[in-house]
Length: 265
Ligand code: NAP
Ligand code: MN
Image 1 (cartoon, rainbow, N blue to C red):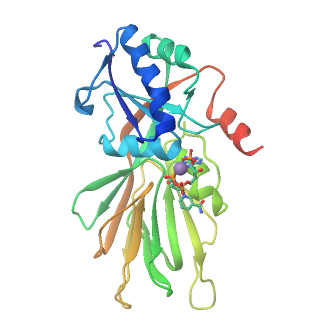
Image 2 (image 1 turned 180 degrees about the vertical axis):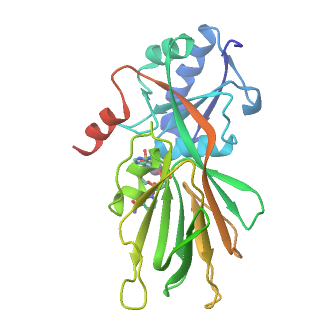
């Protein structure tokens, strides 16, 4: 394996962050890293900020599975960040160490109307863009499963399970499981409309298809992590878990469940 030594820093250009980044940059150079301006040349991508920044770092660099992402937080406990900006020595040590433990996070792929696939690290969310409900036929593999009518649906990865999914009472899922979870946003349930009502989890061997009904001629807002898709016309969405894995550095005694406990308990 080629030595990982080309590092790209992804961050918001805020004054508070810029000060700290300056010393991190100098340290990286002193330690023999090459800081690159073009992320395509990098084999390490360091995101400085919060989880939202990490999601953007992965998205803007194209969900690369051939490089190591390093989440550096500027605040407190973050899910995608194993390092704190003030622990620069620990960060350099971990990036230099070939034996370092690596987390592998599954990404979700969403294909819209056969036009190509988009990736999500947290979730894909569909929401009604008007006051009226959305109506969606749900298929699991080739099975027609249910017709959803309500505000929308959230299709989340295991790492996304602690985000939007959790706010609507979805389960928190161990990222070592290759699966994805579907949660409802205010489904209508009565004698005409019936959905499962609870969240459900699909294995990576299953595909899910959503067909949006257009009797009302309005389209949902589609969110991929923290970005809204500028797609207006959309009929069919195919979901599956990809074999793509986003790799990040893992510190000892900092498992997903350590983070869950620290954040929520
Ligand atoms: P945001 O609206 O500024 O922040 C949402 C919050 O979720 C932030 O505190 C963020 O952490 C946190 N977060 C992001 N990913 C997480 C994860 N995997 N596990 C636990 N917490 C997580 O938006 P953002 O910071 O760009 O994050 C985008 C995410 O917000 C979306 O992917 C979605 O999951 C979530 N979201 C949640 C709701 C809701 O709960 N009602 C609604 C819309 C979106 P940081 O402060 O470290 O960035
Ligand atoms: Mn945020």
